[in-house]
Image (cartoon, rainbow, N blue to C red; front, top):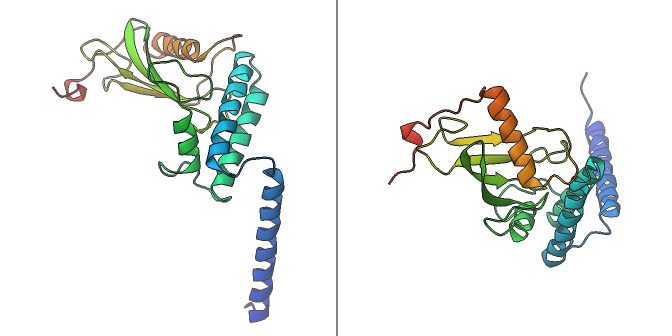
Length: 208
């Protein structure tokens, strides 16, 4: 059985109508959100602050709702197109970069940032993911990665690097980002490494 030209034309009309309906629905859902990057950055700062409070209170439902709205904001800035973090100048990347924590400072929950801390006798360089991180709208806790600071000392891996995505811990009231990182790393060392850190292989040492 073959489709007639009339059928193809009808299918095209249906597809166009569906696209128009989706566009109108998106406009309604995002009507309250700003259209300019300057205004969006100001709103995103507020979203980070609200998200931080929600995480400290273990209100994960509210935290994820804030993340979803932030994603809508980025998509609106992107003309209702995907790829909100596809490149450095994509809306999600700009929002995250313009609101990132000062290097060395522990970021708020939802704020990107890098800082150092000592856990299990290791000095760590922590890179914390924000609201646009992998799986942020699906999981309570945001992901992060750690790198060794002292390459001549044992670490979590022989590469001097370890990422933690999709991890979870027992909720504790008022647990900030550094407390979360500490808990995750300590559990990993105890349960996965059996309290045995590993030497970093020479090929992964920084070149002098």
